[in-house]
Length: 285
Image (cartoon, rainbow, N blue to C red; front, top):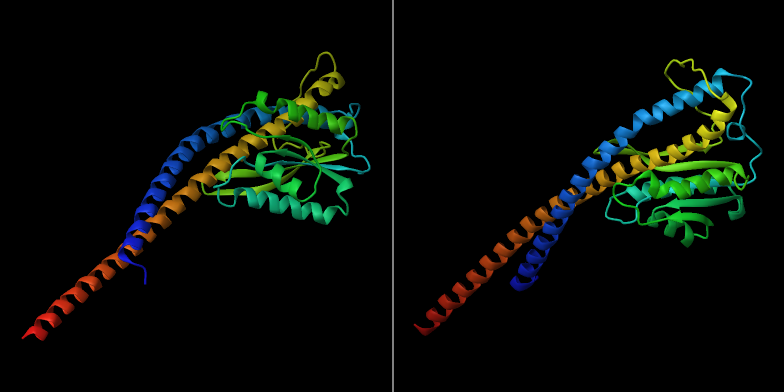
């Protein structure tokens, strides 16, 4: 049985740990609030650019673009969005498990695919398993701007355009609520699924539909990446907030259990001392 000193030391260390996890929970709650606002604020832009692209791509049979056309798949790119740090529950492991299992099913060799990693955890995960990480970025802020990922987004789109990849898939955590987010696979390129639920608006284009599509489609693909990143950041902060809350609650339960054990051990020690005193007094009579 642990001594009173050992139990007391463990209670003290657990209390310090719970103070840290509580502080981390509050910090994550603050970051989550802003990240949620950023993700929701980006939705109207995404819906509008999708509407315009769909209006051109679906509204005219005369307009075509390489980014809208499927081609024989020789090499696939996987853009995986994770965090730079852990302590976020199953946030990273769910994404990486889904992406890695899909890759193993689809490909027989590492020559058939490459990884574009946003986030240190994902980059390190695939490198340890021998996958080719062709592009990566780490150290993004908690509230990233488009300028932070413009370079990697532009390169990803360019790699499809120059046929380094014949298709690109996007893996990220889609934010639903503070306690719910789901791993999402989205086909980034080619843009074969740009249907919009809204009724298409008729636009007049100047100079021409083809020239506008030439500029708009790369921007649309890049905005899909940025939108997924904002979605992922909101999910990350929500997951970390939940994980730290659970850790704090578990620490409190452990403190209560240890305190009970401490009191019982202390009571047993006192009883033992009383018994020894009484026994000693009885022996002197």
